[in-house]
Length: 508
Image (tube, rainbow, N blue to C red; front, top):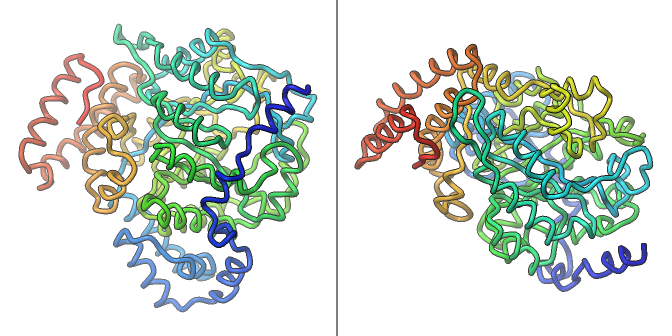
């Protein structure tokens, strides 16, 4: 294993950490965060309502303001916060939910994270790295149910380093797969990447491979706890991970995703850490995170910590932290996942989340194996006892089922990738989000991609309720003055007619 150790020793570039420090210090000050939380207890109701109004104006909140929200104990005020979260979501992102699927390419890892089923000491899983034909097979299975967006997840290991990542991305983009309902061909139109922190030169190569968002989760912003749960491996270096997205910005990747794994440490501290991360990205690059994720710790194979952490987050607090994040950074997308059980999953989508996965399978090669066993849904795969994933999933509904449930809530599902392909990323999309303009373009593209899904992949039950949603959306679009400017509305209607007539991948 000496060659792996040699590889590890070459990964971290100290100068690519120090260039971002402030007088030798990073942007997470634990004492300052603790002070914010302590000094803003028992906040005045009028103060909270002023903070809510500031968030509704799509202005990022300051640490003292977020700490005040986190300390609210009055149930009436929490209801006002939830209502504000819904208002902000609709104002910035309209009433749409964007869907994606994860593809796990490898469970090889050099790290020793106590909460993770992939940690290198775990001898209870079979280690596997997908070859390129297997990557394409997994992509075919994902595309077959209607997905157009993918997040590829790579373990931190020499065998899944940058060369492997680029080859996998190229192979995913190469796949064309026949739709379920007709002879139209589906494909993954945009790949986002969840990968270990890299040096700037490698990140430039990743950018040139045609990715959308680059996602790195800090896991926990609390340094003593971070050191405790990451005892060995490259990931044990807190600052190398903390500045992963800063390096990505310098590499040209201007679409960034931050996140914390809730349940490792106190949830209020982690919300503050995410806020400070957003603030520092804005300070150094004038661009905040495109998305924020807040996966909840769930049991992992051979990990006592994942099941027994004293910081596990209950459903009520989960709802609170999502609402506070929606107000704290109102222009960033919020991603919830199928780690959540169906009821709370839908509740989080209602109060401000903008993206979620569905039909997800996190076993290596799991989509293909599930299809071979005539068990498309994750729940069937789990029944067979073959899922050796990184953690436990709790919402096993198919994409079709999820879209139908979303429609019952009056929300439209979207597979739009237009922003990436039209160059609406980084500072461009931030200004559009803050003014509510991007949401209006996304509304049009949501209708176009939703129509594609209903025609090509939906069950009859989903198609019927989905067509009603489209009628409502078309009527709303027709009435909105924004769409009467220039030829935008007529352009949209022309594209909608073409989609209805069988053309595909048309966007505004």
